[in-house]
Length: 501
Image (cartoon, rainbow, N blue to C red; front, side, top):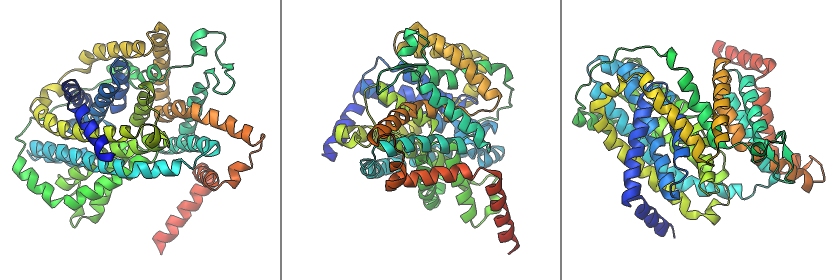
């Protein structure tokens, strides 16, 4: 059966319309990724609204293409400008820009692009092997576990996406959970927070909210853009690059595995995968002093790690319906939008979807490698584009993407309102990632909490007597308590004692 599903996915991917869509989506993602300030999440969110009227297969392949392209494209501005196009490429700049200063920009871009493709390809293998395993565990989940899983996702995302201030992350996550409550409840169809408005009774659509949080603030930030000096492009040096890649096979495999497992953790993101892979490579290197001064292994590790997070972040989406990153959260919403139901029953209800996603990711990485090397010749010109030129295009995409979901002008108004809210959140440094995750997981958490309490007659005892539920309770409590002052002091004392010894 697996071979049959793979052949069907290949047949779908190689249809002329889907292949053309993949090339266009990857190219769009690369350009968005290499332009500083435009994120992969914004690219996926904008495209999600535009794919509403497309067929399922065409829509999903376009989203896979833009996801892979936008994560990979950030390396080119990191190397040429020392400014990561996306946060995922932050670690790439550590050695990519020094290589550029040495007159090896072309070599650095080839290494980064090849490592990006290899990282994504290795992550595809993990998607195929780990998703059924996690789905099997997920089949043991009941309402108690699903509620705690949703809460765990919001808490850990708040911890990891808030730049050291977990409270801000939790506040954002709880606000997202509250936003998800707007509309008719899933148990008794009772209107909540609708204030008698028909549009609010139908609930707030995720796509306009995602576009508002990740696309609209870019329009308002345009006047804060600073001009950067762009270095010239040099030859790609493919032969030398291949020789360096051969010497870094262990580095590539290690970085890819780190990226996959970082991606699986909800809310961590591709930038953490890149930094951890970079750190692991530097720590195991025989010449760690060369890192930060133009070490090719650093570029390879960072790009392999951040791109393998793509597959890692998709694994919990498919198996548990919990996204591993903000971009994956947008993808989860897109899957729902196009009629797919990720989660433990995916392998029973739509087993072919796993193989479709895997083939689309594989082809997207190959197309990205080819297109990125072609686009690299024009990268300097693309990076020379003023963001003021792009803002009107982004503005139009925001409006069209919000409107196409339901054909309702209310969603455009919603996008404007939450766009300003998103900008204010950024201004007060409240992270948007937990907010989005709270909105995505809110319905699941709400319905399963109420269902669990109905099953137990209002008792919370089953949350502490069921093994998986108890595990989640312990982990959640640990994540919360670890942020309190007394625990931080204990950890610091322990680190000091270890340093003295």
